[in-house]
Image (cartoon, rainbow, N blue to C red; front, top):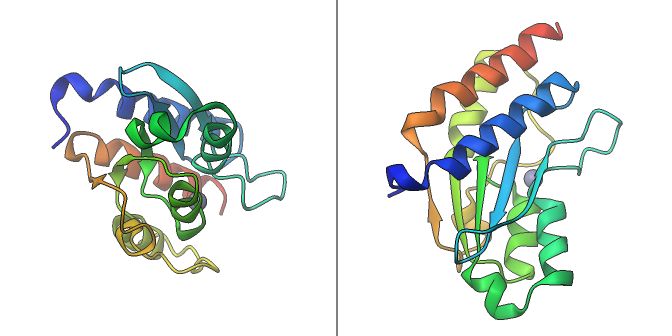
Length: 160
Ligand SMILES: [Zn+2]
C-alpha cells in the first residue's frame, strides 16, 4: 500500500502528466526516486513530435543505467501516472530497477480509452507483472485515479 506520506511522488507524476497534456503530448508522467526518498529523475510523455516511444518511464530507465549502481537501481522506486507499457516494463527490468508504483493500471487506461472511442494501441496492454515478474509492483493509487482519468478524458475530447 502507498501510505499518505508517500503520495507526494504520485502527485508529482500527475503534475507532469498535466504538463505533458498542456504541451500537446499525452498525459503521462513518471518520477524515479532513490531508496532515501531523493528524486533522481523525472520525465513526462513527449510523443507529439512523432516518436511514439517517448514514454516517461523509458528515459529514466536508461538514465539509471548510466548513473546508478546496480544496488542503487534495485533499491529505487519508479512512480508513474499510468502502469508501464510492455516496452517500458522491459526497460525497467533490463536495467534492474526495483519497485514500481502506478496510479492507474493499464487495464483501467485501456477501458477509459475504449469508452472515449480511441483506436486500440499497436502494443498489447500486458500487465507489468507479466512483463517484469521480478519487479515489486503496487497500484492503482485510488486517491489519484480520477485525476488521471480526467486528464485522459481531456486529452481525447480536445482532439476530436
Ligand atoms: Zn511505455
